[in-house]
Amino acid sequence: MKRLFQIFGGGLGWSLGGPIGAILGVAFANSLHDRMEGKNTSRPQSSFNSSRSSSASPSDFHLALLVLAARVIKADGKVAQQELDFVRAQFVSMFGRERANESFQVFRKIVDQNIPLTKVCNQINGFTNHSTRLQLLHFLFKLGLADGHLHQNEIEEIRRIARNLRISSYDFESIRAMFAKETDTDWAFKVLEVNKDATESEVKKAYRKMALKYHPDRTIDAGPEAQESAKETFLNVQKAYEHIQTIKGWS
Image (cartoon, rainbow, N blue to C red; front, side, top):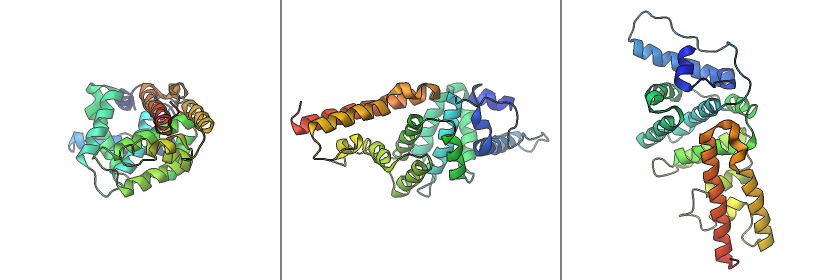
């Protein structure tokens, strides 16, 4: 347990219980077993029952994100090196370069496991707000595009995750459109969740609603990475609004 806190940070709370805690425990135990190379050393337990905080923390957000990433990274039938490199880069930003390699080894063991999606998402839903879950989805789209192409299997896996995270189809398509500026001429309307024939006042109202939904202040509890992601989505909302203003001649 102590070593887990050293790797992932002292803020671990709700993620040490339930299905995510069990997944993390097995991953850590298997990673440690590989490093021991057959030495007679007791393995850590694969589930955690020590006292822990029931509130969300940045470390909890990271682990929830990585468990979901393990589902997406296998969705197209293979694990691309570009996707692994993307996850490793996220570890560096999350935990610092010193702990990145060891934490990444644990993640590789998470990828090897069967992830019970419904149970994992139910646990996440109990401790995160809607805005934080939107940022999880945003990260998963970035991960899917890490190899340069978002495969249909990855899209469907992210869609399943979104449904289990209680994210509406409108919000799913909104975030998806943020990554389709080069391929979808209607991307801006989808980001703001409005029809192409919406009036100027309707578009302005939608912009204000979406700006509030994606405001970085709504993800403060999830830590700086979630807030940086929220800033990116917030900027995409602004770009969508400005794009519609330009093509409609309202600016």
